[in-house]
Amino acid sequence: MKTYEQINKRIESGKAVVLTADEIMDYVDKKGLAAAAEEVDVVTTATFGPMCSSGCTLNFGHSKPKIRMSEAWVQDVLVYTGLAAVDVYLGATQLRHGDPANMYHPGEFRYGGGHVMEDLVAGKALQLFALSYGTDCYPLREIRTYFTINDLNQAIMLNPRNCYQNYNVAVNDSDKTIYTYMGTLEPDRKNASYCSAGQLSPLLNDPFYEVIGVGTRVWLAGAQGLVYAEGTQHAGAGDRTPGGIPKGGAGTLALTADMKQMIPKFVRGVSLRGYGASLALGIGIPIPILNEDVLKRTCVRDRDILAPVVDYSSDYPQNNGKIICHVNYEQLRTGQIEIEGKEIAVGSLSSYYKALEIANLLADEIRRGEFTLAQPVAYLPKDTKTKPLVIRDKAS
Image (cartoon, rainbow, N blue to C red; front, side):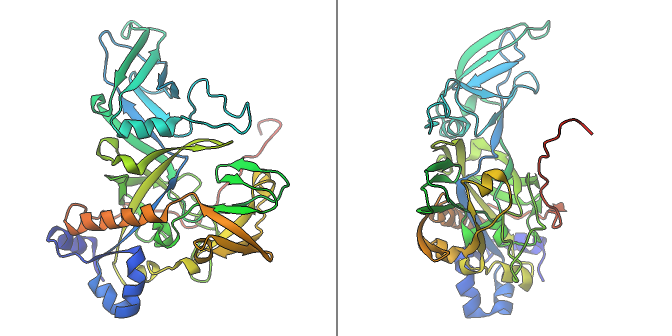
């Protein structure tokens, strides 16, 4: 048994033994579980891919004279102003004003909130335009100016739902091409799409939320952030494999970090044809090896992780819960899967290559003593399920 304090002391002294989730499996096979648990202090996990439930809070400071922004746009992308005078919230999927969206289907969605965040982290000059109804204490009614991230008092990424524990494999059973947040799906199951780093993914290495919880320190696009809550739609009570791995979405994390500390290449705006705009993020989370059980769970392999195959032409939009079958991530990563006797080409919206890069960057920071671990102040629930939105005729 180890404690967080003991592991952090080893990190601070430069003696911590740190491996990535990609490396740990073979290491345990070679050393044995008990010996490896004694030796290894931390296993780093990571993921990189689109995460639509992301956004940021920006504080502009006060102009002279002052303004209480009641409507505002950054690069013509609407931001939420229902906060204090010069605080706004920008969402990743918000579209630029005037974007035709799907008026001429399928829309291109060339620029949205995710692209604003990419440009902000990259240090580009962005335009702010804001309106106000005017008050005695905030008399200015309109402002147009340009700013960079360094002009802001705060730029805080505040994401309600990141790091889905597992996710669907999307196919299209209809006779026409469809455009989804899982990408373009050809008719008659001509292709499939998935989005997960599989055996590298954080919550798949901690399937029962034993070490990742509220207060856990995370690597968010290069900045040291933390888990501030369970993510929206967190549902720990779903079906699991005999090894305890969720067979569907399951857990999620709400994350926050300082955008001024982020690395631009891990914050990328995304355009999904026919669907909308989003944000691709790189996230790394360290797993403290407190005991053999924790270590054993980090040895999960792609072949052990099952993902549900779902028809996005009917079953997904109608929310009927139907699953065609399950496939494992070892099969998915070959680029081809078999569903009901048919071979189907499959692609990923997430990048295993970038996830592995992140896991190694985080491991190097820990080895250098630059990143220590934080014990959760609260653990994620294991028994929750998502509730549907019920359409009712009247309030009851």
